[in-house]
Amino acid sequence: MSLEIIPIGGFSEIGRNCCAVKVDDEVVICDLGLMLDKYIEYTDDEDLTDISPKKLIEVGAAPDIWLLDELKKNVVGICISHGHLDHVGAIPYLANRLDADIHATPMTCEVIKNLTNRDRRPIRNAIIDHPVNCKFKLTSKISIEFIHVTHSIPHTVGIVVHSNYGSVLYMNDFKIDHTPMLGQKTNMKRLEALNGIKCIVMDSLYADHKEKTPSEKIAHDMLFDQLLNTETDGKAIVITTFSSHIARMKSIVQLGEKLGRKVIMMGRSIDKYLNAAEKANVISFKGKIKVLPYRSKVDAWLKKKHDLSKYIIVMTGGQGEPKAVLARTVASGLLRLQQEDIVVFSCKVIPVSVNIENRHKLEENLQKQHVRIFSDIHVSGHGAKEDHRDLLKLLQPEHIIPTHGGMAQLGELKDMAVHDLGYKPEKVHILYNGQRVRLA
Ligand SMILES: [Zn+2]
Image (cartoon, rainbow, N blue to C red):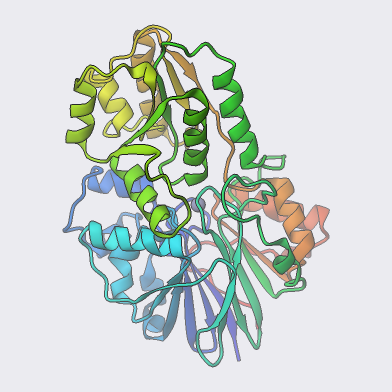
């Protein structure tokens, strides 16, 4: 009899999330994500069709599933927590190597279909959708439970691997939000029922932030507060946010209604995520907005002399990415902004040097046009230290395995568990990829 955790990606690093749970000789994989900065560096952000999975692993852009080499035949299921690329992005490259079905919630399944069909990387694995709160039998030894959690993309779940040797909760990513602007709250009742669980593998990205992450309602209210209390008459409003943040998109659509402006969304990744959300019945923006996915359409629209003060224009590119719509059209002069037009960054800069540089350059270009910039109209989708404390007190897991963080974040989570919650240090495991832990 054995229950083991096999960390594959995202341990002592941020990105390419992937963790295996082994029950006797059967293996469940949770997430197959990309390390986005390394992926973009390797592909130069182009849609290449001849990317070699081996090379992606070598450059550290995809999880090293060779760590499972002798176990590859034993994979009985691939369970995906949510549709962010650092959790699903490696599926088109690696899932084919595993003879197992993919299990996910409806929105996540649509994102996966988009990645594999539309980007021309078909996979042979069946993609099976399940409700956001559900339990299903995977094999005679293993049942899987999905528990809905709030995050910055709809249909995110904690994945529970139930077995006779105890249950493991993989909760990566999450926040505890009691007033989400879209979809259900975190299912605290079901989490509470897991009290005394064998182990949690948990998102620790903001373990070093001494706060509780505010609700998405705060971001909604900030957006309304800032734009309803600013002179916007006759001014263009351009907003950028994360393409997958459907709740934020909903707030922007509501803001458009309030201001009597048409909402027009530009960029391929916005179109992909909106399509996935529409197909999964998460939202219905039909008739309320116009979407221009392709560069030719975006450029043609911007070349026409529209009165921009009649619109809210939503663009990809909050990190300042040179190939995204905002930076590209500002640099080329296609987006003709006037003095005191408004640009809203409804996002934070993800602090890696390339983003910081890109964003700095974009803001410099915007300032040349004397526009007004509203930054950080945003709250995170990741819980912080006080969310972690509440979750651990609710669950009281026997073992804690922090993930989705560098050494500093993993260490902070361990410190809190040991010093504040009374855990023995040997029950909180700080792991590198490949460093297995046997729990039973
Ligand atoms: Zn995420």
